[in-house]
Image (tube, rainbow, N blue to C red):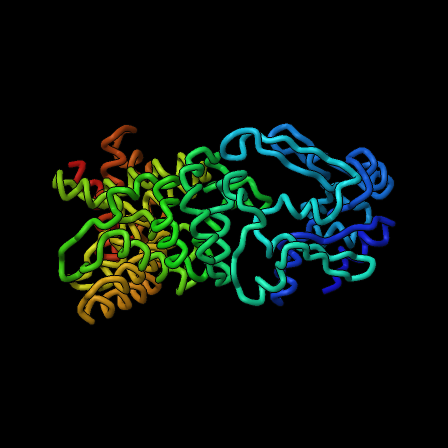
Length: 454
C-alpha cells in the first residue's frame, strides 16, 4: 500500500521503514491515516540533520526523554496530507525502571537492528515493519501468522509488566478489530492487571494521543466493546482503572425488566450504543449510567442523580475534557425519564426545554440502547420512536428564553425591576409559551406580564 507520504519520505534519501499499526492495518486491508516511520542507522541528532533542510522539525519527548521527531515538510501538498506532522524515530531500546511505564529508560542507538527495535513493542501484530525502498516485510515475531488467525500475542512475557496500559490496548484491539486473546495472553493479563493502577489517567481515558483519545475511548468506539469489557472484568483489569465498577460486578437487580446482573446490563447497553454507531458521549454514558444503583438501593436516593455524580468523578479522574465530562454527567442524570404518559408536542417541548435538541437526541439514543438491554413491552419502543419524531417536529418551537418574543428590557419597560423577580417572570412566560406556542407574541406576553405585575 504505497502512499504519497511514504513516497515522500523515501525521496528524502532515508532508508526508512513504516512500522506498527500502519503495517497491521495495511495487511488487514483497513484504511489508516497515521503512519510512523523508523529510520535505522541514525541517532537523534543525525535524524534532525537529515530532515531540517526539508522543513520544520520538533523533538518528541516521553516523560522528558527524546524518542524521535515530528516533521513538518516544506512541501505544501505533503503537509496538507499530514497536518499534524510526520513522526520519525531512530531505533531504540526501552527498559522499565519503575511501575506503570512511568519510569523507564530510552536508549536511541543507530546500531540497534529493526528486529531489536520491534522487540520493545507490545503485540506481535504491531511488531512488523515494511522497508520503503524494497517493500520487504520485517516480521521477527510471527505477527503476520497471528494476524491471519486474528490472535493477539505479546512480543515478550514481560510485555504487560513493562507497560500495563498494553492490557487495555489489547482489549481495545479486540473491540476494534475482532482479535481473540490466547490463553497465554489472558494469563499474562490476569497476572499483570494490578499494574494498571499505576498508569497515568491521561493514557487510559482523556488521551495523550494525537487524536485526543485514550485507550478506553477507543475501546468503546470499537465494534465489540461488550466482549472487551467482559474480558476486562474477568481478568481483573476493569476494577483497576474503573474501581467504581466493583459494586456493580455480580450485583443482582432481581427485577423482571432487568434479570441480568448490573455489570452485564451495563455491558449490553454499551454494545447497543456501538451497534447504533452512537457518539462517544452516549457510549460513555452507557458505560456509567447505572453505577449509582447499589447506593440508591441502600439509601432510597435517585439512582440517576447518584450516577451523574459518579460519572463526573470518573471522567474527571481520567482527565476527560470538561465539556465531554459535563455532557456525560448530564446524560446520566437525565437518562431515567419515563415513557408511560402521552408523548405529544407538549411533552416534546418540555423535554426540549430541559435538555435542548442535541442532548435530547443523545438521551433518546441512550434510552434506545437501555431498552434493548431490558425485558420491556413493545409500547416502550413505540413511545420512544414517537418521542424521537415529536422532538424533530417541535425543535423550532419556542422552548428557550432566547426564543421568547419579549426579553428583560421589555419587562422593565412595563414596570419590572432588575433582579430575581424579573428572571422568574421570564421563566413563567416561557412556561406559558411552551404550553401554547401561539402565545409567543409580544403584545400577548406583555399583557400577561402587566397582569401579573398588577
